[in-house]
Amino acid sequence: MEWSLENFPVGMNDLDPKVRGKAIEIANQLKKEGRIKESTLVVEAIQQAQEWFLNMEG
Figure 1 (cartoon, rainbow, N blue to C red):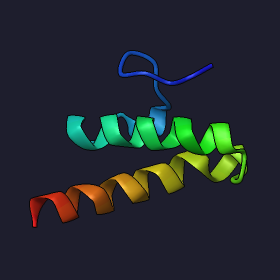
Figure 2: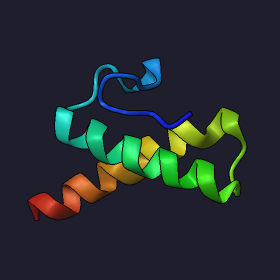
Figure 3: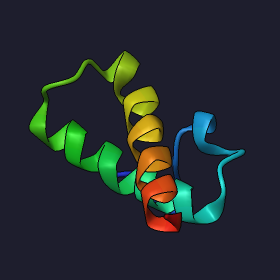
């Protein structure tokens, strides 16, 4: 099952909505690829989304 803005991991609750959206996108992609264990997938997606956001802000 893919995550969405209405259905996402609890660990993403406190994220800025833009970061949460990107984290969901990244998490779904990582899940499809199957390269990362489910237990670390959310943490990795959040980290990548936060980096994306910081780079976007300049």
